[in-house]
Image (cartoon, rainbow, N blue to C red; front, top):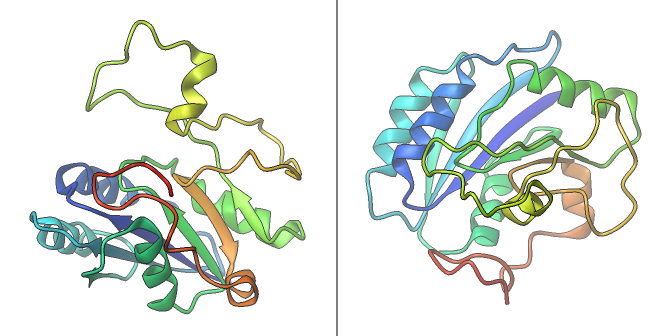
Length: 192
């Protein structure tokens, strides 16, 4: 199995650097090839340089690709087009993963007939202070996805968040790419 870790980003070099540094602690599962791709989406800051430095420190191969057309869906499609792995594992540019994240992902795809797997996402409050008024129940609006410790089948429209999800490449090839008329573009967070 080959897992490609795919990170689309737009002008968030400082936080991207922390995310890439966090990948240095990943435990690489036996029998699983791993690579990292950062797509610098219409970036005008030092994203490319930060990504290149971060990738150079990783325990797996990686590279940076620039995509001039803005848009998260455009960047995600470019991520998939630039890689060949069996599993496309997307992370946001502001996440920290547990050291055993890859092992859990590989196990989920090996042991279950899942085409898409979503991972746990807990919010962290380093960059900004957690608002006192924010109830835990509302953290899902900020991409929190706690879930349980055991795999569960998701059949409804909820349960996956863009911060941590993966799918088999065959699904992408069958269904087609992300719709580029939907989703974030630059600092515009409104989906069409």
